[in-house]
Structure formats: C-alpha cells, structure tokens
Length: 283
Image (cartoon, rainbow, N blue to C red):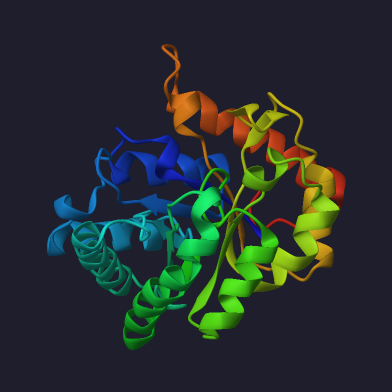
C-alpha cells in the first residue's frame, strides 16, 4: 500500500516539533526530513539529544520517516567532492540514528553536473556513487539517487544504466516525476521503468516544458495525479508518494508553508480517492 507523504523541504524555517505534528494531523502518513544547509533541521544542528527528540516525534505521531533529503552533488572538483562525500557519509550516519522499527530512512541525493558533460562524467559518477553506496551498505542505509532536470543524470535511460553499472541493492532511485514531466516525458514513459527501482518519490506540480517551465504547488499546474497514482500502483510501488514544494515556490513573497501543505494534502487526497486507492489515514 502506498503512503501519502510530505517533505519538510517546503518548511525550511519550521522546527521538527512544529512540522511533524502539523503534517500528521493533516493526515499525511510519512514525512521526509530535510537536512541541507539553510533548513532549521540542518545536519550540523542535530546533536544526539535532537536526534532522539526527532525520532520520538515520529513515534508519538505514528508517522513514517521514509527518507532524508540530503542532496549534495558528487560531480564536482576533487577537493569539493571529498567534502561532499564526508557530508553524505555523515547524513548516512544520521539516518542510522533516526531509524525506526522498519530500519533507517533512505538518503536522497543527486549527481549534479550537467547533461552536456554526462558522457564525459558518467564513469566518474559510477565511481563516486559506488563509493557512497558502499558506505550506505556498511551502515544499512539505502542511497536514493534523484534524476534531475538540468543535471547530468536526467533521464530514465541514464538512471537504469547507472544502476546496472553499480549493481547494488543499496542503490535505488528517488523518483521525482516532475523532473521528467518538464522535459516533455509522459507518465507512461517514466513510471514503468522508474517505479520498480524506486525506494522513494517526490511529486509537485508544474507548467510548461524545458526551457520554459515552472514548478508549482499541487493543484496549480498540469499534473494528473490520479493517472500517476494509478500508474504507480499498477507498477507495484508501495512506498511514500511525497509532496515536495520547490524553492521556486518558496521564493514567492507571500509563501505560506502551512497553506502549501494544506493545499497539497487536499489535492493529493482527492486524487487518491478518485484513483480508488486505500489510505492508512484520513485527515
């Protein structure tokens, strides 16, 4: 059974003890925790007592922690890569500390780089993602790699190639379909190859196609959530369908993280019902 989740990516200024209870009470079944710089839950702020308190919040509100948003690029100059790898490894360690009854959350990240240099960079991506994956394996944490518009890893074909080259059960995909939608790819093109290799997802809304596109709050754009949910269910996906509110939306002068969460829940919950799929919660 799929879960309806929300990412604190859309709540950079809200402490965990505000965001998690609010989202649970709305009816979300899972909350991805964002730990990148600029967020109040940034990695360096989470000492041992803070980690225990966050784990307790998830337990108290009976809500799942499917993933950490730790996004650090790996296709960078060597000195920067070593710093980024150290941070990613520390995020893997955080995932272990935040583990619940079902084990630690996956760690979401992306390659960085750009599409024009992928053919040059792809073997380096194999080497570096492979190194991170081996560290994840040593700690029991799945690495969830996100294909991303404008980055080196930007298509299902490249993603499947990379997964095949590394060939580890500890490397899977964070499937954000919006990054394929704005490249003009259809649900039917992307869900069948991506869902079976995905451990986590993001959804948002969008309008337009590369290079003229924008990311939006669910309900503001062109995304057909009902058809998407039915396709994901048919493909056998059983993880969290997690709403992510993009930085483009957060840059609006009137952005309200609570209102964005409420609208997202209403839109996705309605699509869930229209798709005829079961829900664990009913907010």
